[in-house]
Amino acid sequence: MIPYGRQDVSESDIAEVVEVLRSDFLTQGPAVPRFEAAVAAHCGAGHGVAFSNATAALHGACHALGLRPGERLWTVPNSFVASANCARYLGAEVDFVDIDLETGCLSVAALAEKLAAAARDGSLPKVLVPVHFAGQPCDMAEIAALARSYGVRVLADAAHAIGATYEGLPVGGEGLSDVTVFSFHPVKIVTTGEGGMAVTNDPELAARMARFRSHGIARAPDELEGPPDGPWSYEQQELGYNYRLTDLQAALGLAQMRRLESFVERRAALAARYDRLLAGLPLQRPLVRPGRTSSWHLYVVRLAETAPLDRAALFRALRARGVGVQVHYIPIHTQPYYRRLGFAWGDFPAAEAHYRTALSLPLFPGLTEAQQDTVVGHLHDLLDVPRQRAAGAR
Ligand SMILES: *Cc1c(COP(=O)(O)O)cnc(C)c1O
Image (cartoon, protein in one colour):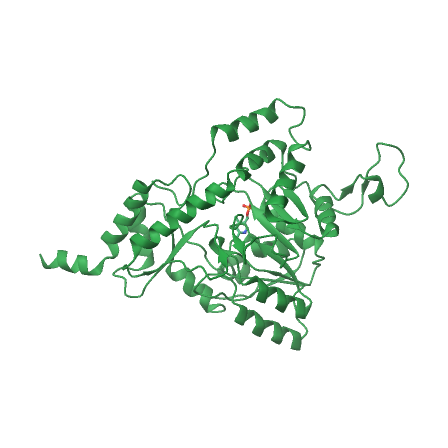
């Protein structure tokens, strides 16, 4: 089976992890701050706060942004459930903004309309979570301007998008979100096994996220509320979690960050090759808007109505032929947990239309051109209508 995504871990990546195993610190040592500095430097952001995964980072960011019980977070239905769950952990309400069907990202028009309505009835959200779907940055200038004018904080879910750029600047360093979160799960662009990071330019937000990550405990003398009992002193100032990344993971992340550019280049080259080889088939190839580059976490095609078989049949046929396609995403609001909160099929038509036709093709740095040709060959075989008619006529 050719998977839809796969990590690329080199011998030198492994050597750097082994070095940590022989060192004094497996966790809370020097590798984590070095990894945080490397990611922040890549983005051009002031601070990086590493977490055990991106879900924890989203939770920490929502807490730091002041999301409280009863307040609201808005995100898109076309994402992984973690984009919404981070609000629920804090007892906050979730609502959704529909997507732009062409990009799979948040629709600015839908956002403008929903914000205006929420301002009228006093139900504005505290936090908005745009998701850089498949690695393509959202319309951040428009989103940031709207959010600012309604006093809404922006938490960008860039789980797919480390290495992407917006108006020439790296995602997370474009200055259009309060916090940006990356994931280092093995299917994402850069991996630490499990891992995540929040980047921000705001030192106060960074300090709050760092404290939340470690039990709510402060240690630095200038952060203590009272005079220290002694050099051993620490204070638990609020309720936090153990959401730390280990030094083993950070060492892998540091090694992977040095390969980020080559990962994204390889993904982009394979995406361009898919674009060429799939032309003429009844499917909509991914569209990247001007002024931005994708990190190409996913290559998502949408099946046209004129296709000779539906998405489910195509999915099954490709899987049966050893092509590990995937579907991104089942709209979050249709999950049983969210339906029990009052959402229903039909609430967000663009996200639902995207879901019904989307298919993610294999895309990862180690995908060979021969494997890609196999995937493309099966797609032509299954979707090329004139060719099938000719075969039927014979
Ligand atoms: C993977 C992913 C997450 C969660 O990342 P983890 O590191 O697995 O917790 C959040 N949001 C999106 C859009 C993702 O794809």
